[in-house]
Length: 467
Image (cartoon, rainbow, N blue to C red; front, side, top):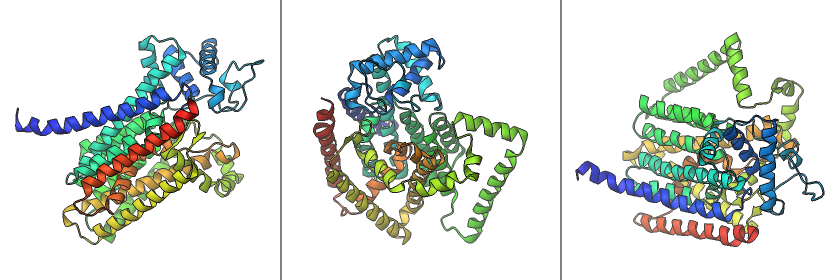
């Protein structure tokens, strides 16, 4: 065996091990969580089955699909565990999803890529039972999750070639996160959006560490476009792409001239984009994109009549932030399987420690104490900006749709397109508190702590709730 291949075998073995362990973790949730208890699973499966059968909404075939889903929901005691707007009435049982969630019954407004792929899998499988079809789609999501874990490791290797433990820690944190395993054991288009977004960070790691190449730029652009074709939270991917490109092009010592040039270029792009809207072709393209992403049609009217000004004030940002935090870590089912309050306080303490460690590390890098790795300051700042932009985009979406009026809430899985930066920042921040020479032991201890926490979630909350 050549030296080249001998060097590749350990890396391939690590990737395979991470993939298998992650898939096994998600399989636990896949089989322990009853059908239809993933968030919005009935609605996602309706869209998937419409794609699989080539049926259009509002047709008899679409009605038959809803009947099959509801029959399976009844068989698996959905109304005992799940979320609904109208309670189940045995004298007048529901016949359509609108009977269960009036006004919020369908996902057919979503970008179609996830549903198209899952629909093809269902069609090729030949399965007819709704629960069996759901299980197949859950396995598709689980494979995507395992792929994201491998990509987290690849991104870590690209960014930290001198610190293989950091790459492994980022992947293990991603794989062991209870909510990541839960949502990737459910039928949900967030999973494909997170998968393509992970590709942006795999391609972007080399750009931040070395230089931006056309190959890396094309890879990031392709992944960002595919993320946009999957879900609106995919907007995080092009935002990440833009920040990675700026970070990779930023000189080692950015002077005022570079700042003015960069700012001028961005302003010029905005002016060009704004001017294009006034052209007939530009307006047509904007209208098509607006419909594709199902953005509110009356944005201008809502802006003029003060609805958005009111939303900016009345949107409960702290409550939303709490929900996002809890459901990022561990809040299962339809947000109705919640841990004891003390666990979230402990998790907040861990995040605070990681944040303080991150600031400590950034300060050390800024003072030039690690001259061999000057690029890390730029890379970590870019990751920090991506995490902040992801949260801002989620909150902006809630304001745009006036969610506070309807009781609609954001969830932690919306951050999963930015999970690789978030995992990297958390692991880096915690590592800053570990004395040199103790990194390996600390890594094993962290992995064990994550395993114990996930076991607590399963044995102490998920299994007792559903079984």
